[in-house]
Length: 265
Image (cartoon, rainbow, N blue to C red; front, side, top):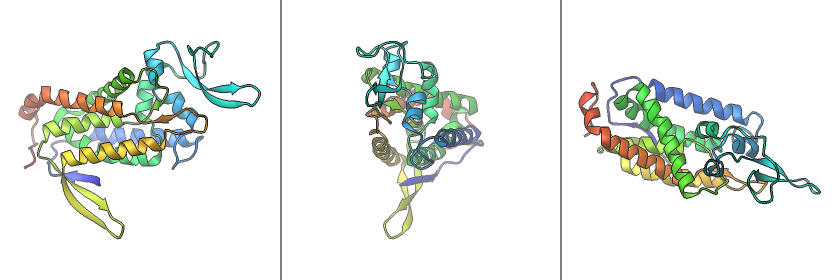
């Protein structure tokens, strides 16, 4: 099921949501120019260079990159400084703090990008309408960072590069459930023989997004060099919890101050 629109009237133009969608698409296209291809996503090296690797956050000052594992055979693999069998410093990596943001805009494949952008368009417009443009941008970025923080907390030794906007979008879903508890979405339901449109409650769309996102993330976990890039379930849980808690804290004031909006019935 792909969300198209809900039954809540917008009070302002979703300019930040549109800008975020454009930014995600542009970053993906640029990242795949010298990678595996537009449909299959950026190369493993690109994903590890710009993705957020939990190990580098829990072991501050250490970095990871693709390097030579065996000088005789030339076998390539992931190397991280600080590992017992790694001598010297891994150089070909971005600053760790930078990957927390770059990884948020880099997706593992085209399907993951399209899926996340569909939900960003459907849910982001409504949350931006409630928060306002600048507050919404800050909320989106903080949701992504919160998701990454939870991933690092529960998997501090992981060298899986966390890619994509799933943590930030999970935050939007959490906020939407609080702000529009009775919201319903017109969704596109592709069937084997035809395409149909059905109306579904927002909580069901949240469940569908989570299941499909995990499956899409699994597509990027296995790589030729034995390392990995993909999506992390803890980041989604962290982002959703962030959005839920912030919306609960602010819901009373937001409902009272935003003009031109109404709750779905």
